[in-house]
Amino acid sequence: MSGLRRQELHLDRAEWHLPGSRTKNKTPHIVPLSGMAVRVVTDALDEAASAGALFPICGVTVSAMISLANKNGQFDIPHWTIHDLRRTALTGMARLGVAPIVLGHVANHRTTTRAGVTLAVYQQYTYGAEKRAALDLWADRLAAIVGGSGADVVPMQARHAG
Image (cartoon, rainbow, N blue to C red; front, top):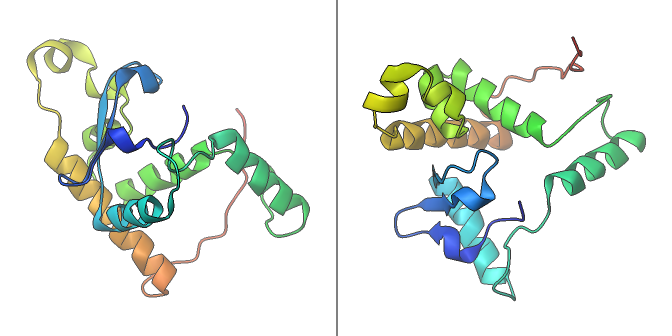
């Protein structure tokens, strides 16, 4: 997947529409954008010179940058991947009380959101409002952490295989 694309943005609705061709499970995904995310995207749009991807850095590049910083002594994380950001966000939202079914929809995980006949066949609700509330809640938490108010500092631990 290559970055956020302008044509996928619907800033009037504060949404990012990912087509199925750009998701791992081939299922289209609407990502509600928090006010913070809209501001970041709007700033990027103002600065972008081309109509291509706004954030062309891929997960491999981010992981490589973190690994380099780790080698230079900036972090003490033995192994890190871009999925750790996803894991952190979903874990943080769970700690804030977001229901597991909503977390599954935020992550576009069909195995969680469509498990069993009832959810796969009969229940067609997409949890859009709940996804938006969860992502707004997470944006507020991030703002508190970045702003230095109400942030709990928790030492990062290496993920153990097993």
